[in-house]
Image 1: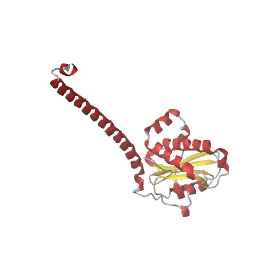
Image 2 (image 1 turned 60 degrees about the vertical axis):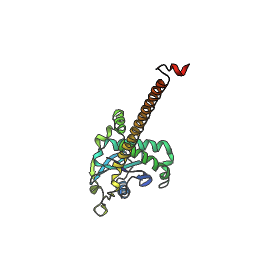
Image 3 (image 1 turned 90 degrees about the vertical axis):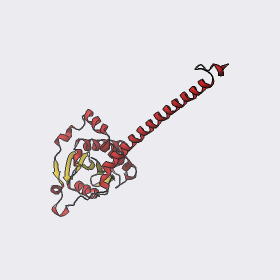
Image 4 (image 1 turned 135 degrees about the vertical axis):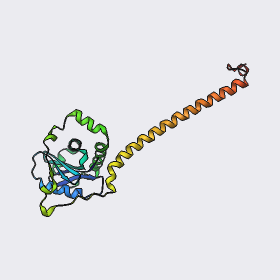
Length: 220
């Protein structure tokens, strides 16, 4: 389960985006923006194959992501809410006049970081469930992209099968870090044990040489 692509846009002007896999999601996302005009607040999802495009528009600023269908809707919309708040907090009113991709170099790193967090960290779902911020997701309608795009504009979602392992890669990295930590602690415990055994051996040898456990022959 993973969020594979995300975008922040004003109208149809893309301000920042990031893709975690080789895909044409950017092209489809732009067409979704074009076919969802207006500045009214919107929470909607569009499906294609086993992927869902989730769109949140607030005050004219659109935040969109593409995720595995198995991820559900609560986590992607929690991600979109988080990204919207971070973007507005970082750039303020400059988002109203910024040129296309003006924030991409800086904010794409934030998109990457938060995509990984919401895709792999179990606390992401736990925290947002406790906050109860995503009640509006209950009203979200899931429509097929083919219904949104004109017949002549239909696009197949192309996702590189090798790059589609991104979600597994994120989980592998997490487990690898945990494994390295466990191995490190195990090595520390073994080292402490060896030092303890070595000290016992040294003490036994000294006790033998010094004629007793109190080392009387060496302490005179």
